[in-house]
Image 1 (cartoon, helix red, strand yellow):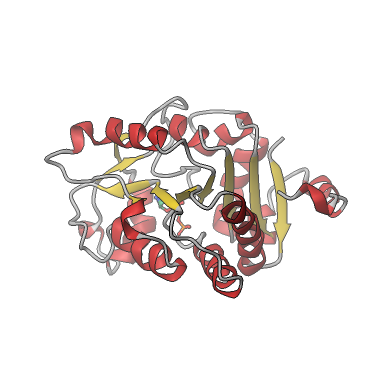
Image 2: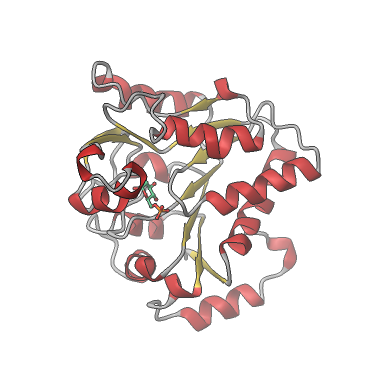
Length: 262
Ligand code: GLP
């Protein structure tokens, strides 16, 4: 079963992620982190940065692979996912920039970029922990509803809904939001050894209920998590509000032995 943890705040969720990743870094200093953009993972990165600095963890060999990138946006553009990952992950955590990869959204070379990216992840030994946000339509990475649950990294067309959701990063101007992207496929994401999905706020409640308690369907790409042997969904009360089995998730987490971790 997907483990569901209901928390009071983004900081609390972030701390759970950060503890798990810090333990991983101590055990495997060259571990591979799957990275995501969006607002949901920000507190998790902040909490992880805090632990890294407090415990003086050596992260110089930690490797990273981002989920996705807009197509046709210069890497230097402040809203390219390359820039966002540099600003929110690489710099605050002190990672080695050359070891952190973002899919290549350059239209001239995008045709083979997906296969190359999947090969690079496999050559690195696969992703140890993949952090995920979720779109209001249930997308993960940029795998919009209808995405094959076996897909590899590839080019996708963004839905109008996703472009509207993300217009806030482009001064609210829909015309500036790219129409295409390159994203790790659901099949790629499912190969990561541990998935941690974070969601906060009313706007995510429906997508979370579909993901955890709905049928497995490409119409809610995140529902593929139900097929993953080690998936953790961390939500606040609002994002959890439409879950039917809430009391059980709380009970299970409250009675979890400390040695079990997440
Ligand atoms: C974008 C990203 C996703 C992210 C989603 C939700 O579409 N490609 O990876 O999960 O936004 O973002 P937020 O966490 O800001 O709600």
